Image 1 (cartoon, rainbow, N blue to C red):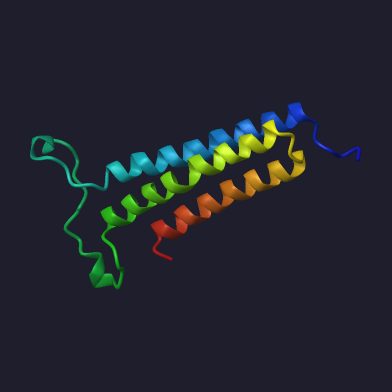
Image 2 (image 1 turned 90 degrees about the vertical axis):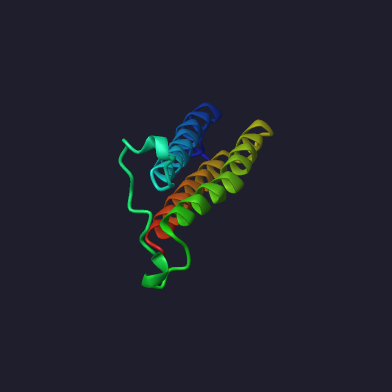
Amino acid sequence: SSMALDSVVTIKILAVLTVAICLKFFYVILASGGKRKRAPEDGFQFQPNNNADDAENGEQFSEHERWQRMVMNDLENIPFTVILLWIAVIVGGNNETNVALAASFLLGRIVHTVCYIKAL
């Protein structure tokens, strides 16, 4: 069809989506670092209130545990999916399908992160 994406355009779109997925992952890693308890020698740095007990609010995990789980979930899903995405390109998979699934994956990861942050 005349609306089909050519391979060069597909690779450019998927490269941008891959960067966006990685930036989302780096955000979670950096944000989670601020949630963990600091070593005593780091006392001069800002320390978040790690004493708040999330169980009082009916939540199952502390804020630190929640962020740690987000990082682990991203580590379990993002590398494997990005590798499969690029394998699909290399073996000549359908360009429109690859772009649609990559965009859906990025949206899903963002929604997952927001829901996990908000404890939804």
